[in-house]
Image (cartoon, rainbow over all chains, first blue to last red):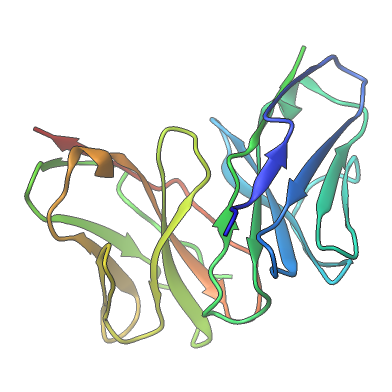
Length: 114
Length: 110
């Protein structure tokens, strides 16, 4: 079974631009979560989508948004990029609810903002 | 959500057991303890989880104290490939929202 895939793996943008990152979950998984990882703040939860609806949200500004499609694939968008948005963005998928469904993480997209 | 406290780093000799502690003193009754590890900026990898009973799988054992305020992840025979950052997480049942904390950098030495 294929794992979680994220595209692109690396991205370089300049301040003020916007970016869209993509995540394809494991087949059959309906929940997709996004995390930001930086050296200073560590791994921080951005949001979770389940059945095309945002179900949980972390403490990030409105410049960070996402969506999920009917096939469970998800995209994350960051508008008006700032230098501090440089980070590894990780996507994780899980079957659905429940403590027995662990999250499987993708390899991440490394975003550099210049 | 409950938060966790872990030592920033630990050393372990190859072939010996690695015991990684985690404090989660404010854990609620419906929160599970999860352990993940991250090797060299790859995506975190699931290791094990538990509620109140000790758990064991092919990778590790999880020991949770009776009051559930702390737990220990045990890697029975650490190898060099176990060098990673280990995260202890508490998670509310039915919520896919993890607070990762700072984690413990485990250095396995030959």
